Amino acid sequence: MEKDPECRSGDAHTADPLPSLKDCAPLVEWLYAQAKASRWGLSRGHFAMALERSVTKRWASGALSAPKLEEYLGALHLEDLALATACAEGGEAAWEYFFTQYRAYLHAAAAAIIRSGSAEASDLADALFSELYGLAGGPGSERSLFRYFHGRSSLKTWLRAVLARRHIDALRAGRRFEELGEEETGEGRPKIFIGPPIEPADPYRERYVRSFTRALEKALEDLPPQERERLRLYYAEEKTLAEIGRLLGEHESSVSRHLDHARRDLRQAVENLLRHGIGEANGSAVEPGLSDAEIALCFEYSAEDTPIDLQKLLPRSNSRAPATAKRTP
View 1: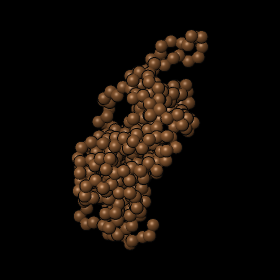
View 2: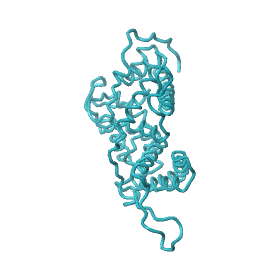
View 3: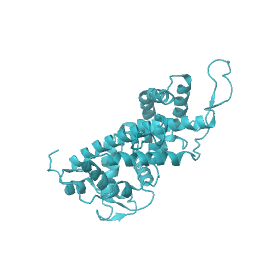
View 4: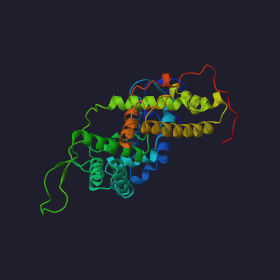
């Protein structure tokens, strides 16, 4: 982050085990302002706890330098994280906004996943809405699924992935909901039982991760060398934007823009490969293409604790890509 408040937790170049945000009050204050969290009445303490959960989820073990911590936190979808955290804490203003802005999106996303605008899609969306709300205990309940949102993707992307997983789980189980009977009047839709969220092990998880890794490897091979080198430095060697800029002769903000562009291109390429199947040189598909719901799960599982070997996927080239002329952002 350029000109952001710094975290003074230890030496800037020393990798400490997950620096505590308690030592980074100026940074947390800056992030809180960027997230516009005050509009939901969200306290700085609860927002800081959400940030720490995100960091812990990303780096469950291992060391993390203060500059890398700042860079990671600054790249989060902060406004979405603040909204989700406020909803999980039962903020009335946050829930009113979420209901107004996201309920229609949930229904549209469910219809796209099921490929139907039927009542089944509405039931899927409404069931997830109830889980987000924390049906058993009301807003702010520990049951709310919002506690699993860590801000690494946009809230809409995360919601779509959760919908896809719920849909596929229901298909595998052979049913979607358990009916408890009709309303007392005997009219309307049957009641829906939604218990505490159950996260059983997905027997297809390894296959989805293998497909994602294979598609990612192929997409990386097709990237221009300069873009691949930026990704290698950032993800495999975990260098900061400033360090990459010095190595490639670019301004820090230019490195950030180029990385964003490379990530968008890479994601689109991976999605296309997964959707159409990864083919051999003779044009035959090794694996059948996946549905949109399955592709969403590929990204979700691979973004969690999957041991993808970035050093292998992004090996050091024999000769470093030539530095570009320094550009003004």
